[in-house]
Structures are given as structure tokens and as C-alpha cells.
Length: 276
Image (tube, rainbow, N blue to C red; front, side, top):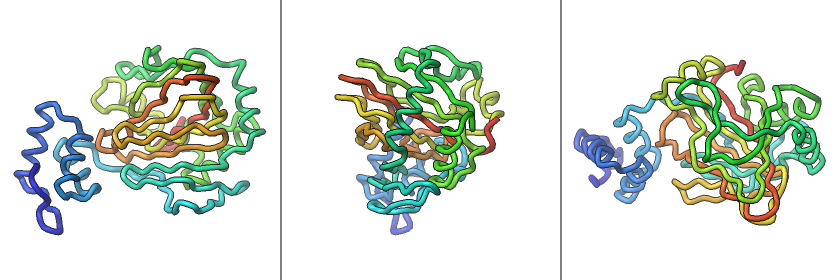
């Protein structure tokens, strides 16, 4: 790996040629970033070099919480704790996002509407069954009832992102053995169905996963590229953003298998524009 060039860390033609050559050999973006950081490149610069060399789309604005670990954030009707924060990638673990009563109410309201979870069909823009995802779930429409409306207003203030730029809350139930294998939440620009998906509000730019229950064992949210596991704890949430639909965002994540008990989550995806 070529070493970083001076304090400015300039991406020379030789460095870009190395990135292209390594990618052609099958090395993944996280592997390239790890090699560059080991050679002295700053994480943010390495990401820009790799993304630019491999023709990633230009970054877009994303929700970013400018706060420190140990702080409490005013979310309007509730004070929310910041339990952990990572900068590259941008990941925040929040505590006290929902009360026990709110968690129970979401689960009970959603229970009668649960069906086998689908994933986006990237070839067509529709939905399809996927063996990688074995949960059951349902969607609330935005502002569907007083509870959902209250939670959405709280999340909009917490993340400083407009309510109308969010998809409806999705509630998921994971029984023992259920999982969601590592994946990206953004829509791949190379897929034929992506243009029709983007017409509804542009790209996804961030995800918030709220834990409605605490399973007896298993069910962590995993980020394989950075070796992070977030344990599901009722009322807590994990937030992460991705300013490009590209692996350089290190936003690969999944839901590890539930080993005992049940895991319930509510997921909120945020879009660039108003979601319709």
C-alpha cells in the first residue's frame, strides 16, 4: 500500500491506480480502507480517495448528531441519553428513546398486522421474499395514530431531520432463529429498479433501529466492517447515517440470529427528500 503523501495526504495518480488494481483483484472497500489507515491515511481522507477513485456518487447531506457520549439530548417531550458514538462510520447508540409503555403499545398494535418480512426488489422497485430476512413485520403509515405521531415528532427533533423525509415506522418481530443477514439500507444505483424507488423521496441517508424488547440471548445489531455489535435493550436505539450509496460508508449491518426469546424492533429510514 502506498504511504500517505505529506501532511495533506494527497491522492496521487499512483495511489488511485493502486486502489483500482486492488479492487480489480476482488478486494472489498473495507479491506482497502483498512490498508490505507494502516499506512497512515486519515479515515475521512481514505474514504474520499476510495469513493472518488471507484466512482461513488457525490456525498449528500445526512442527519448527524453533533453531541458527545454521556450527554442528554432534548427531543421535545423526552430527554434521550447518548450511550456511545462513533465518527467513522457515524454510529450513535441512544438510551431512553421510548418508554416501556410505548414499546408495549407499538408491539400490541403491530401484532395483528404482522406478515413475513419482505425486502426491496432491486430489479423492479417492488418487494420480494428474501431468505436473508426471516422476521415478521408491518408498516405504520406516517402519522397513523397518536402514538406514532408522537414518536415521529420526537425522532425528528432528536435527529434534526424533517418528519416528512421519513418513511413510516416498520415494526419487526424476530422469533428464535430469525435473523437479517448483513446488508446495506441504501438503494444500489446500479440496479434497474432504483430509479423508480428514488421517485418516492430520493435515497435513504440514515437508519434508526429502536429496540422494543430485550431477547434472552442473541439478536445483536452487527456492523461487520468495524467489528461493532450493539446489544438490543428495550427502549434503546442505534442510529447510523450513510451519505453515499457506496460501501465506503461502512454502513454494512445485520441482525444476528435470536438465540432465545423474542426481539422486537421499530425501524425508521430517513430519505433525502419528502417521502411520498
